[in-house]
Image (tube, rainbow, N blue to C red; front, side, top):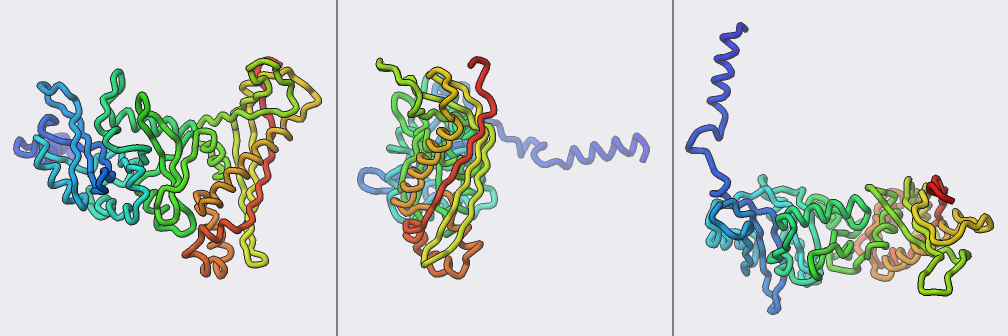
Length: 371
């Protein structure tokens, strides 16, 4: 093919591209791009749907528009939204799905998300976030000196996830967690205080109802049990044998960064109950020590024991609330299917009476620049 023929072909291809014609062109100021949706129950237990979209009009003072409507389904809500917005609504760009804590305490709330999994243009990569409080407090938040709300919340979740302070559960991942009987869902949780802030992780039970919140420290422990470290993970513990100040400053504190995490899970079934052994191995870098160096203190052993007790206490919480965010049920199903099949419909109760043992091995890699 000579140069002239190639040029003609490129021109024909350019003319055939969709969206290049004047009739297909859509300016940003003529579009309503929904980036956040929310669902909650009001004081009368009516289902309320919310949406938040950026405004691109030069004349507009507010750079975002938010609406809330009472509806029974998302499709019905979308039609009501279309009567309020001034531009053409464009779907498929949703970044966040906010779920009110009151909604998460009700039955069958997950069915309200059906539209996202059924429509071809819907995204399933949006982050699902629980709200400790009314969703409207988040949707209508006017944060000064902050980026647009969708960008601010998205960065808050993603950055916190990289620091192991929460989880990052997408719509696609949530569906897997809800439908899999071998584990229970976990999603990020935010709240409104003086501003918008991360609370941690919301753990749901096998019916999808809100069961238990995980704070900042517990999230790090949760990631250790899962055998994962997304980015930076720092943990502070007390060293019982270290010298303690007589003042108000607790000088027996030690902070370390987990460099490497590996957790091996083994399962068995004996005497009518399941048994799980979780063996965690960590390489740690010491980043802060408030007490003097004492060669008689075996820091590796003490750190391992402190972590083991914390991990054991967290697992006891899971068992008390009959939830399985660790997915131990998947091990039971994979290796003991006959016994699992008999209890899969009430796995939370079975897990509550299971024996779960934890062991921790710690190796200090670095102690810092000073002794």
